Image (cartoon, rainbow, N blue to C red; front, side, top):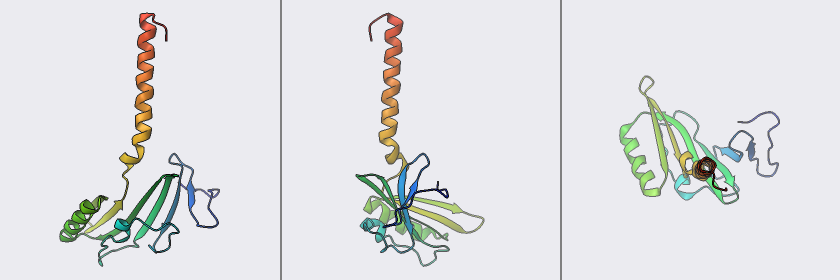
Length: 147
């Protein structure tokens, strides 16, 4: 994701992910530290007092029109708390992932405004269109029709 020569914005400290994603990213523990405020639903997300790690908030600038806001943390596994945050996420239109590690009695919580599926939808549509075009071209070649 990031390397020693990764670009960093000297003004706002966003780092450029030069991998396949090509996003500008900022990760902070202070949810008030973003130049562009976090989406309200992420900002107000009910984080448990039983968090076993830092609560880290993220902004991913996908392109000039699309910003993904998210937060991640580990916490003690608490199914009643999980029900509360499931309801909050549903009401707020957030994507929520909870991964439970039964051996450790702790869980990972990830909340985001846009899922990877939603972010990849335009790219997948372009790939489907290209594949359809290739198929049509191959069919035309097979029938001797001009392309």
